[in-house]
Length: 236
Ligand SMILES: Nc1ncnc2c1ncn2[C@@H]1O[C@H](COP(=O)(O)OP(=O)(O)OP(=O)(O)O)[C@@H](O)[C@H]1O
Ligand SMILES: [Mg+2]
Image 1 (spheres, rainbow, N blue to C red):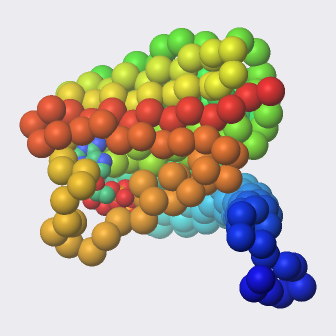
Image 2: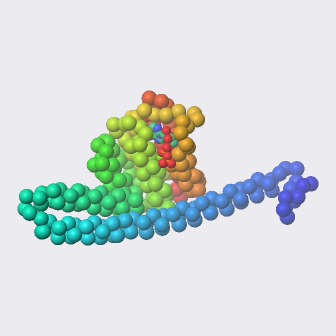
Image 3: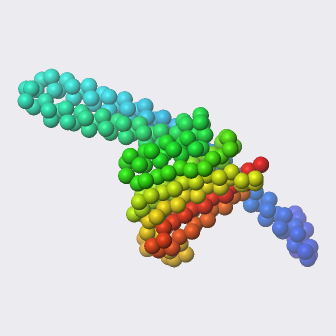
């Protein structure tokens, strides 16, 4: 009979299985805690970008207005142009800060937050993004946040890699699972193949995040056939 730490292991190896499960539970718990810390940090960053950057741009606008006062009227149009660009930068920063950690996710739930995210992507990229389905009410906040992060990464991937025209985000609440899919009509990729450049972390990261909740992430894609990400997370 072998000894594993203080635990005796018999021929059935049942104890090893129990130990592995316990170890897995411990590392999942650690990952969950790490994600929670990351979420807190993201919240803080979102507020900082929103408030601090907003203040700095407002200060720049005031300084520009002072400069404009000392200029001949014929040169003021140039300053006005810079001021309009600064307004646009302030709007975009505010919007990105909200998308980073939308308060609407806490206040109104997943679907509203996904709608908000899609509107921003439509405005910035011209992609046709649709949100469909329902969650049948509010979900556990950790599930809402995880699904928001999955969709955020999936949509970012579509923008970066897919050359797609449209994206459909679908949320369905089944008897045991909440299911979310993100489907694009872009170039697709060889999910089993070797990456050409350095390996990305996005899909890996959201996959691990989903696993800590006992869920699964599936990637359905082929070159030229678009990409669909499907996530299922158990709900009680
Ligand atoms: N919707 C998609 N359409 C086409 N290719 C995709 C799509 N999503 C992912 N890919 C491919 O899969 C690779 C891995 O994606 P992943 O999100 O893990 O990394 P990344 O986006 O390259 O980098 P990171 O997410 O770390 O910034 C991408 O580099 C891209 O080649
Ligand atoms: Mg990515």
